[in-house]
Image (cartoon, rainbow, N blue to C red; front, side):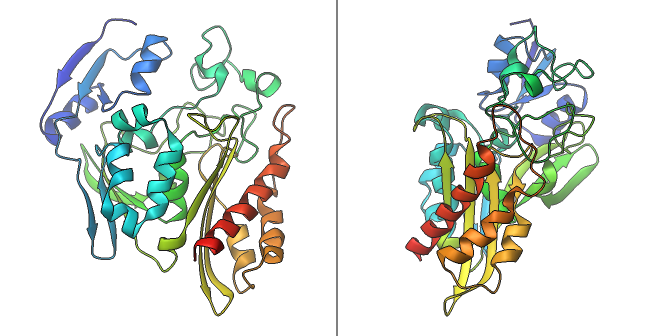
Length: 325
């Protein structure tokens, strides 16, 4: 690990000023510190934001509000979360080991870096780590790579499980920065790689995620998260699905579907949602709708199995929603 300057702050204003001057925010550090050890990331300055009062978790009006520094374990165990948005609790438990959940923050989880093996190989070309150097995964280790939203410059998947469920639930972010405060959907936080894969999110320099707001909905109490992976504990998704349905008299009136492990960002399945609307809540409807989930998919030598696994995962997640209704 290379030497760096360290600063601890207790106000948002001081944190934002430090970050605007080039410092990197440090919360749980489960991604940043790991990458610093491997010298994949080499920031010259770190600003520790753990003293900021952003650890709250509360049900509020028509939804749920979670401070960006709330720990994953605290959110998963919260009675308000389990009552109002059980999908979030389920997703967080599936998302990491107990040890990591005790340390990792909600905001940090959304901003974690990709887990493509080539990203961490300093001797391998990687456009995320060294723009313009190339993408080793295209002809290399790509079993975990994306099949949706890829480009000739990057095929890495976004690793956050939480982001998948937040996108499905139309959650929003409140952020603050040198130019003031703003709010936008979680889905708009993440960029497609296109020809600038090193630009992964839409935050402006110095902007700080303050909180996540998740609206309530008629589908919230029965939504489910299904994660398919190589092993049952502490493993990133090969394919995952967050699914929520509103069903009236046996007919689907609303659907919210998002997938992980298959896209270069958390992937909202709008075509699947549209195919489900107005259909009976049956396996036949689920299968027909899931069949459109891979339209436009581009598989590589090692991840073609995801083209079949994604629709199957969506169908099973929808069945799980029905079982809990």
